Length: 124
Image (cartoon, rainbow, N blue to C red; front, side, top):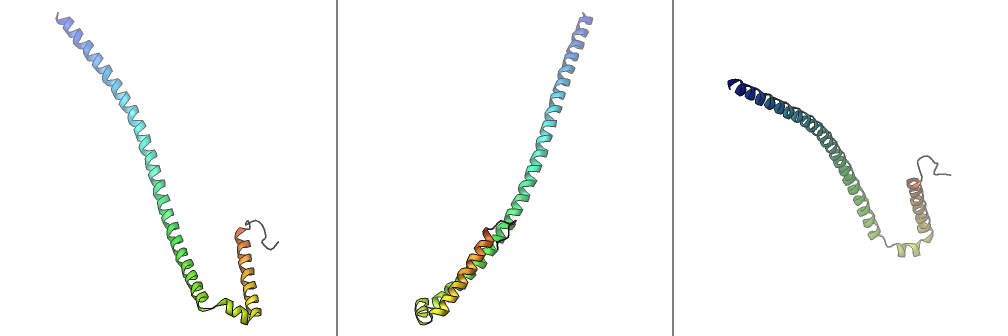
């Protein structure tokens, strides 16, 4: 009887050991998967932080450029409000015509430079 009890305990111990080893293998495999996921998430977080920093710098640059553009717009509005171009063009049509033609040509040249691909010559 004692032998049967010892065999039963030994068999139970062996089964418990096998179940424990299987659980350990499963947990080890799950741990490896989780470690890979953590590394992947760390890389993603690093990329997102770098992108955030870059977009923040670009946004600040755009804000500075907007302020410069708004200042130029305000200056132009002030100049235009100081001068009545209709009266001036009636009094000095040649002066106004040359000035407007030069400004139009400069705007056209700037537009051409901005819309011409970099690998072609805008003067062609």
